[in-house]
Image (cartoon, rainbow, N blue to C red; front, side, top):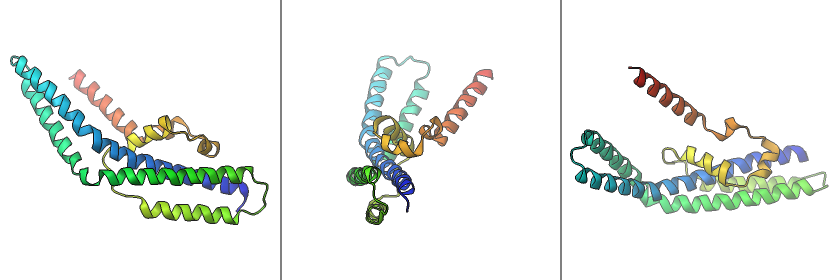
Length: 190
């Protein structure tokens, strides 16, 4: 494989590995934090409802609180595995860091052959595929995009992949946002 193709391949694989790491860590964050946030919000609103029982929309607010509780219970099904998501996310980050080191080694090299580097990349990818968990929580993809594009340092990947705004905002998020806006517009016109 030529140097340019190997650099491109390292960057593409680095993206996949780091995004996978961020997705695992996003699942961990969601399972760790969201139920507590929902519980706090529900408690505060419940106290407010006791204080203000004459509020016109108490039934609707109670219904929303019940929905939040159901969501929190669904999320808590991941509790037994949450530490595993954190461990795998950390291991994948380490694999990403080794791919980045390999990328810079190849980039600075004047060698004509990169057989050893290709084999190292394949070994790291095999490790990635072995430890990767396929079951992720709902919305971890959106959160992983945020963690990847706005928290992680991915300049070395950007040298090869040239990300645009379309890469940074998930299609499912754009679709959901458009659907929500259309629904709000329709409801306000009725």
